Length: 427
Ligand code: ARG
Picture (cartoon, helix red, strand yellow):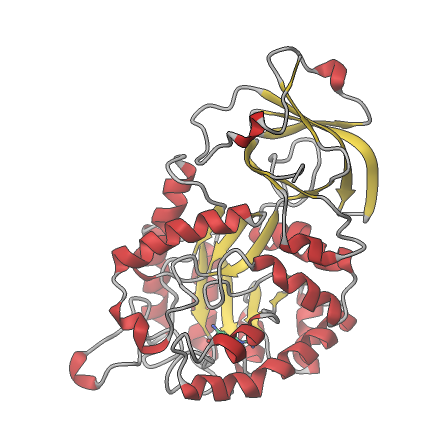
């Protein structure tokens, strides 16, 4: 039996190795059962071929000299975290008109760096809700091929939106004829866009159902797409087996998207009590990015965010937190979605403390990012908890996140699919 020291473990994977043959015993840590919120103290977790094959008090008898043992004493193990709303190709220091100078290849290179930052922060699965030119599909494939380190990526490809809407590009005057790849108007045109996204690798459909904060000339309260168009998007996506995420801040757009049957409402900033009720009854997830407002209002101007966007953020930021609290109280399903890319990648864990400040218990916030998101992603059989048969996506922190959820802002150990990417437990 080889007991590897922490020093030996300093040599960690940078990309997933091609073959996963060995067994890894994570020994003696405290394992958080996210389902019932209990911590199983001093418990072993055995990993083989990228999956969890055993959880028990003492599994040392199950390993041989060829296996690896990692000492987890004193650490709390949790399932890998997930973020239901990121933009890996986005950079927090490049906003507004600066984005016009960023080429597709350049933003893809940023995506490579940001994927690694995200994984190292303990986020082993993300939904990328919109990227130009299917850059997120390329990132997913490079990560799955083991070429670059990164989380499991569920890509949306191009976000679908109306002409001049939040998902269009509205910065340049008419003579430039600038338009985003996901723009479509009318029920059949949006269906065609869904089909095209699927053809080029999208695994989730994102569309813009209201104006937004960061887009030029759009109104937060204004609905974008009619019910007929939204229903066409949802119907087409569901026919093809994909879920639908709608960007929606304003009350009317949220209500219409709920009526159309979307699977998650992103932002949900001005959701009404009736909207919350509909979400509770239909089981629609609310993915509310309640941290990002602090970034936008403190660092946004220096990053190039337009003055009109800063004004819009002032209207929406606090209201969104209050609506989050109302949604939590009403028992709505809440996803853990942050809009990383607007703010800095790798800080995805910052939102936990905000969710606790605005009405959740630490275990509720952790559930949102684990079993909750797993359900939203349709991946409950693979991810979201430390359980036999699930993928070995396991993170650990030196403290107890149930006492202080901010422990999750600084994750000390990251394993994805049985490969160790970070181990700073002894430090
Ligand atoms: N991408 C979103 C938009 O432009 C960011 C919204 C951020 N603000 C907020 N309070 N969540 O609309």
